[in-house]
Image (cartoon, one colour):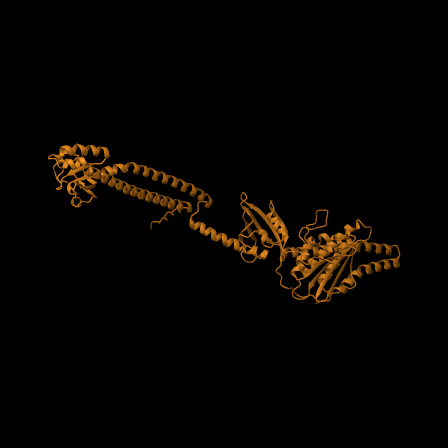
Length: 552
């Protein structure tokens, strides 16, 4: 049986903070060590230079002394010069002062047994009248020394003086500064290491202990995720500048070029959307309109005020489908109401027949059929577009149930096939359906102030190269001072709080998307007119503002 091979233990991956800590400690240690070495070399060089200057001054002073010149001529120079040289040596702190004859035989020395012996070192340049220094190993060990001539009155060399300081003494002078330098270096290394540790501890917390490869992979995953999701994502900093904007957000907001680091209120977005983004509280599933789309907005704060996260979902198709569903629902409710009314009328006819009043039954049934069929015939004859015809019939039944009379003007006429294929039926439902709904609400509200039958009049016809849709009501009308706000999201005349202020905003957006215009007028009440081109709509790049809201 073959032996099972155990997997080798996985080598632990050091975090980015840990790697930076090691690198920074090594750098700090190298810098501190290099600085300490340079400081030591500089101090040693300065100390040696100071020693040379000191021994040169001592040697010259001794050589120039009149007593030394006089003692050189005595039969026993040592008797006079030895005590003098030792006193000067002690006073000046040098290691030795040697006075010798021109042959190099010592007359003085710190070690008495060395008197009379030959001086160890070079004296040729001194015999030539020069003063030079050198480092030489003599009887006291290596030393920095100077040899200078003693001149008589006729400037002849009659003796030599050498003064020196041993290297050991110089090293002893460096010991104190060196210890202080080592202490400073160790303290600097400790402080640098501590600061590096604290900085990297904070970095470790921010990077969650991940290594460079993990951070790189996380960034790649992050970028791939942000740019692959269909939901728009915008990140803002504390000053409301764009930090990140993914591809979906650029498409939904129709942004072009570089937007990062730009303020959110400088991108040409709708005022209502910008106000919601910059608001203090979070936003949850709030519907906003741009030039081309219906968006669902959500915002939340990042951490403790670091910025804001803005998410955007495209609600355009769903809003259109919702409008169609509302129309279908209104059709269903209208059919239910008509079925209910038909049942009541049928019961009346049956009752008349049972009572034997056959002629009255026929007259009642005929009158009711003519009344019900009148609007249907009028709409079908005038409007060949089936979507508009069905919408008008449904809205008429719905308005009648609410006590509002909906009529189609005599000049209304749209033949089948006139509308271009680019003009989607759902856009017609959005425009005319919202106009009629708002007109019915306005007419009912106006009837509460004026005792008259609330009416809504619809005009649908071809006007040159445009499709004209006009809806008039008998309500209070629209104040000229608020015409610019009528087509903004959130504007509503409803007082019961059920209005969302989206109907007319959707009308303006749909008209704008198809290259049309919206006009606001006044007759008995409000008159809203939408003109849609029957040809291809022009390409538009304007921001989502209620362009075309004209008071006529």
